[in-house]
Amino acid sequence: MNHDESRALYDRALAVSPGGVNSSVRATQPYPFFIERGDGAAVIDADGNRYIDYVMGYGPLLFGHDQPERVRAAIQSQAADGPMYGAPTRIEVEHAEFVARHVPSVEMTRFVNSGTEATVSAVRLARGYTDRDKIVVMKGGYHGAQESTLVEGTLQDTEPSTPGIPDVFAEYTIPVPFNDFETIETVFEDYGEDIAAILTEPILANNGIVLPVDGYLEHLRELTANHGALLIFDEVITGFRVGGLQCAQGKFGVTPDITTFGKIIGGGFPVGAIGGDADIIEHFTPSGEVFQSGTFSGHPVTMAAGHASLQYAAENDVYDHVNQLGERLREGITDILADQAPNYLVVGTDSMFKTIFTKRRASSQEADVCQRGCQQRESCARYTECPKTGSDVGQAETERWERIFWQEMKDRGIFLTANQFESQFVSYSHTEEDIEKTLEVYKETI
Image 1 (cartoon, helix red, strand yellow):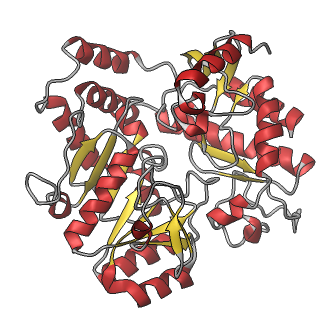
Image 2 (image 1 turned 60 degrees about the horizontal axis):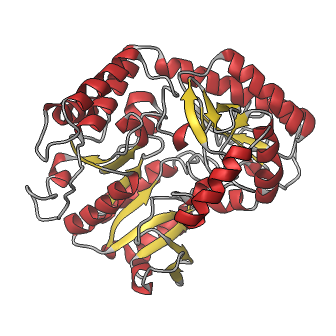
Image 3 (image 1 turned 90 degrees about the vertical axis):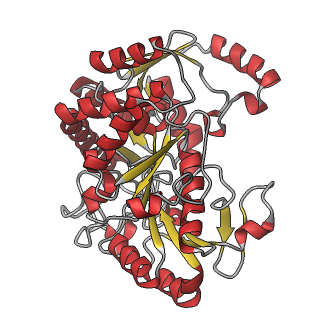
């Protein structure tokens, strides 16, 4: 493939943007390819190269790059009526009503502009509602670029994970390993009266797709209820992707107090949302005293895009299609790995997938393994090898993924997320032919 135009654009970008990009995850090696347009399940770069796209904007593009006509019409109609007004609109009410009808935890919703803004607001709300300060987060979880969760360390020794955050923030954040029953019990024994909330993704979706082990989310629900703390599910990635319209909380049957959303809820436009029990959400201003406000919140074009998208998904076979293709892809990659790289593992669920380049030797070649990606099934012969925490994924061959595998997949026309950690997604625009072609490329590249 020729990348001369992308290289020239990157050279120009380095002069005007830090690192040549506007989000650090886009800074691929040796330089990013610049996208000109999308076409169905594909993207075309500045040099005319075409790629089957499984990045899908890092999750928002449920339909791929070709929206259904009624979704496109809703967006165009709203944009034609004016970009924004600084006043409430009918469409934001209708969108909030739709979310409340379908998501188990949601009675009320406050729309904001990004997943980060949603989680920042949710943390403030939890602290204001409980009159407590400490937040428990999962190591390897991700909740956006915010001071309260960019923290690392042990229970006794935490510190900010990036320069620019005062050390005092880390005093109020407790990072624990995902799927670790014993540690979370200890935390609540020691700090239970000071904990405002547990903030967790129901699936670690920014760290190789780590599913909860049986009973873990239920245990978090019980612990928080018993100690007067809140349970916050960050469903920015999993929301309206895993579990369909009920989201991951519906799939797992665990109802949090607060849920944060982003990505799909805005139909591909910038968005975030905080939903939950009305008694809690009404603590936001103006009905309550926890300040939250934003110029672009409930942006009418975003609301139109999100509402039309979810309505279409509710009335058509969108989730059946993407989930079936996701299963076929995970199953096919699992078969390829069994022959060519038995150490590696496939993870994912619904329309999400990832291959983990685990270093440990496969302990078994028995037939009783998860054929469609690790499901944390205890009877699976590879249960102990399946990642349980973010640390497990971090110990994989991350450099091999980024510097060899990703590059070779890209050169063969497959666009994957550029590191071992970020999720990949199937869209409504993907076809069985796309999946089979992708599997052929995996077979050549692994």
